[in-house]
Length: 114
Image 1 (cartoon, rainbow, N blue to C red):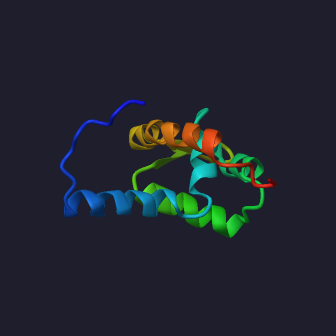
Image 2 (image 1 turned 60 degrees about the vertical axis):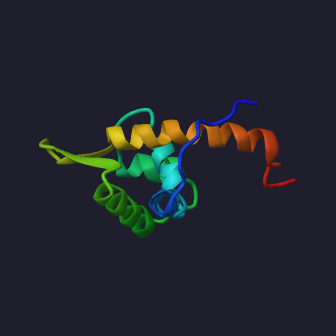
């Protein structure tokens, strides 16, 4: 087992970790970010890739993720106008940081139906 580098944990570090967990812990954030991993997508594509999410929920989450700097909204001037949503570099870094957590969960947590 690898030992993590020693970092002084202080109150500021704890607050930053809690803020990060607040971002990723909000319902639909993970599935939306994962749907964006393979490139820019339109609203209807997100809706199809995130089962169970309603249009208002998806709209709200995309706006919130955009405000957090994790999703970039691009308007493509065409007829009709097209709007795509894609990961920002910050979101790509966040997903990279979450990959070890994902691997840990695969090893240590049973499937939902277990």
